[in-house]
Length: 341
Image 1 (cartoon, helix red, strand yellow):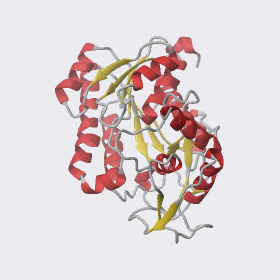
Image 2 (cartoon, rainbow, N blue to C red; image 1 turned 90 degrees about the vertical axis):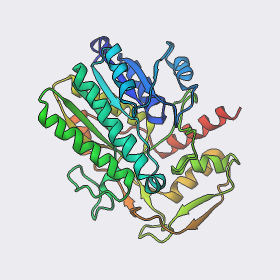
Image 3 (cartoon, one colour; image 1 turned 45 degrees about the horizontal axis):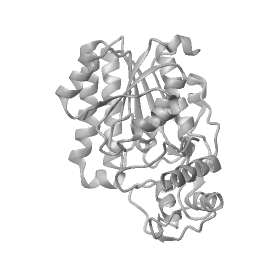
Image 4 (cartoon, one colour; image 1 turned 135 degrees about the horizontal axis):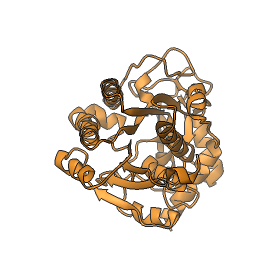
């Protein structure tokens, strides 16, 4: 699709100031979409919209809004005319979800309900939903295809599965609703400008942000959860995908919803797995720093290996990842250094 065909398509990104949301904002703007951000900045930096303006050259429209606030969400939709929603806004820490299930279901499920309700009230009939490979749990065979039965092993994963089921039921009952479910594997990396990247305002739990903080001296060491998995080096293997590839996947998903492809559910990954130690060694090489670590007990529910089957994303969306692990680590290290100047 050309930019001209997107000029009049107005898209709302919920959670658009976050890690994946901000990169998708840039990708959608570059593809010619008209984009607005809805965020409560609970886990995103307040200056992200200013950074986005530096990247794309125009001010970002931002609605400071909490998706748990029904009236506030309805107010945004009543005041604006949107053609589609890309729904990122959610809580995403697995350990935190285990200790705070009430908060996770409220944000991830009731918040999604509020967005869907406002869409229905204002005739918005296209939504891309940010799901997760976590819904698969610990499957017996690899790579993981979209047909693999869901078996969530955490409260976080349960909320994502509930979100998928809710939207699927809604689509079955609402013939006009077009739905793109994107099951992410492990997003890493940063925009080449170094202006946006994975920079949670809360304590990071994802592997690479923790490694980055150890490399920069902000944290003393990395804890590796499990060194006795049935993998070549004993540490867990994951499918890491560059956030720029992931953002491009959202553009392709939205293109499909506006085109003739219609609703879809696909994995977004590379199909290649790297162990925790692979990531540590790559980051050490890229940064020139030593990453102290110690191995501790496995976390409950963590699979030994998790890699995506990528055929459906290619067939349905024409999506293939283009960037590798070194690109991800280089981007993250560049972003971190720019923030610490």
